[in-house]
Image 1 (cartoon, rainbow, N blue to C red):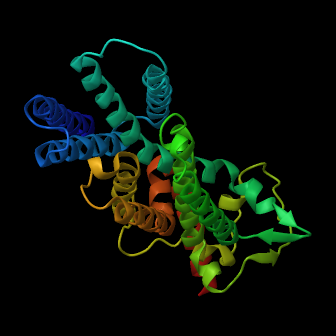
Image 2: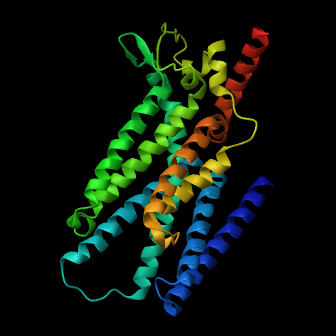
Image 3: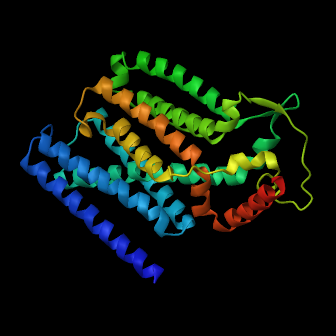
Length: 319
């Protein structure tokens, strides 16, 4: 029954996305590129594609999702290199069908980024938390909130670098990939920094950045960070009463759309749009950081159940 429901949802969203893309292609022939009609049709096409890939993350196996994501990223990068190289030599104008295909791939690739980014963050939490817990500076444990603050400070210097680079004409034309890479890094630093700070929010509020910790035994060769918990770990797994992660996921997609498509997605002043984009980036990271344990449940339900049982036992012992 669940499979049928998933199939119905998948088909419905897929058909809506295809209809939105077809509408965008038809408007491209009928209206000017900078017209409001084109902007609105592009918005609908992008948003529908975003929703499709966000929902797809919950409908299919995570391993399959990773393979599809890798394929689209590699293919879209190869296509981007080809299109970017055209400016260096004379060529016949490319047909309209190619640009329709180009936009479809670009919409899909960037729509994939938000859910894939969230997936990989949770994946690396699962895989590397133990190693991070063991990282120390002269015997002191480094808190995630401290790492998040370092990332935000790095983002500040990247912002200054981006401001300088975008004032150089060659960087806006032949070397346009340079500011593009800086924008991507800036987004990642702000997003991941905010995520880490708000995931470790209770410790950040208490200004716990470095802490002396004894090494815990791991006799069973398991991920002791999750399965050998103490009362001090309870707050770290506490989810907010209101689920934040759906808003965080949508806002992450919205942020990527603003950064990638700019005024082609929201027809407002570019300088204001950039600020909105990075503010939304910080908020989306905060939402997901505060509600990370609910997202963890989606990808690792068995481990989540084990952790929940251990947390309940610790809570009952502390009473």
